[in-house]
Image (cartoon, rainbow, N blue to C red; front, side):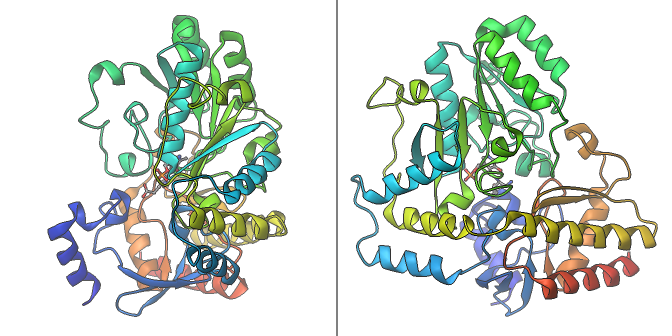
Length: 423
Ligand code: KE4
């Protein structure tokens, strides 16, 4: 069957035909591509069409798809059993790698998704501080736990869902969502509610409104303010962890949050999330403390093997070279858009970037929302037809992998040049 037929079939059995909303191509139109396999920098759909992939499973595939050493590690682990529901040496090995890569992380709990990591982190912050209110930032997305689906980014922003039905008002009222990069509003919120704020959770580099870098000083001010008011600072590094550096943004910025959330890359493409941080906080987690959290497949041995293999390869790779390649691609895009007189604002941090179809700076969700999402949809469809698979939403990041070489970058820019001529 072709993509259209598969999509029709899938929609009979799965809401929207997808198991995660942003995959549905709702904001860019057309039928999503049903992927049959992926190798290196490319994915192949059910019709046998090959695309240069800039989604990379939304971040995990930084080494490229089907990396031989990662696949071998998965095969080897699976041959010894796929899940035990008991501790393994692999979980110690994963925890050691994370604590060595993140100096602020003294202890780690692995879970099965980024959502579980952030959901647990705010429960832990509430349990540790005895406070109920939390602060997040509008356009940041931290997974779909109830308290965090307030003015969220990613698929919530893509689909224009104001919040989400199903979240009790009394709970939603405990979440304050403030403008990203605006520490004055944070200062004011803490002046009013400081004694009730359990934590501030932030994407240190926002990836879910499209890529937005922190204004110099913004994160440092959050660190100072949380210390002043006795709230915990949580860095949601699910995207940035092992993406922007071997470690996270915190290593580059020299900031030590109290808790860090991870996911995506640490699973090497298998379901893994993790939270870690200060020992005195983490020890409040069951069974050493009263804050409960659990998971049947937490620390799954096959997922650990995939993640460990991925991290061990990454440790020897050059993030600087990856960033330079991303910069070359973004400069190529900028030149082509400029030659056509089409406004574009490209925000890039390392191998993470977003082409915003707007002329002005994009520094928060309000400015990101000023982008021409209709133009983005036309550009997306043109690139897709030309064999380049971009994020099917203006409010997402593009992810470059170590498997994207000069050939892939040249083909991408050739496609862009052809597509812009048609728009
Ligand atoms: P998951 O539960 O999807 O593993 O992770 C949630 C999450 C937490 N924190 C950040 C910063 C995240 O970006 C995410 C998930 N990212 C989205 C893409 N922007 C996942 C893609 C999807 O929802 O299908």
